[in-house]
Length: 193
Image (cartoon, rainbow, N blue to C red; front, side, top):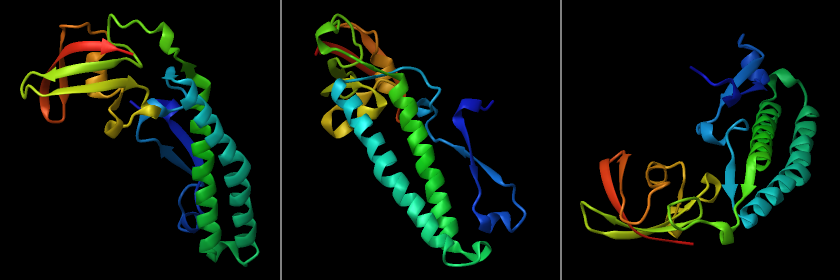
């Protein structure tokens, strides 16, 4: 079943309309968790400010540039045979979808204060030292929102398989995680901020 909140309607380029396609297209996002109607996104204050700056740049710089590109392409002649116009309209549609998505993320964002984090169990923004019970290798991850996830920096999303498996666990607990590589077991060694 398709969740209607994960669908955007965008106008099709004129080149596709010429061949009898409908005048609207459905745009599905690849990650339903990032859709406007999704749940609360827990982020740090810095991440929220970064998201607001990115939105401001899209609205103040990229949107006017997109409008200028469409106007310039429109001046070049017949719109039915104008590939540049079609490309500009398509780019504008994608930009508007990104703006709507980011506005939704900001609207559902909640700032997490590190001083109020309970380190008795794994939660968002906690750092967790784990032991992989199969390989005996130890790793440390910080559980963050999807927007802040960066595996190279040791930050994993709370919605990732490992993040979901760790949430709510306490020191000494074993988290069983179903990942693409199969079932993995991690023992929680230490929790900090």
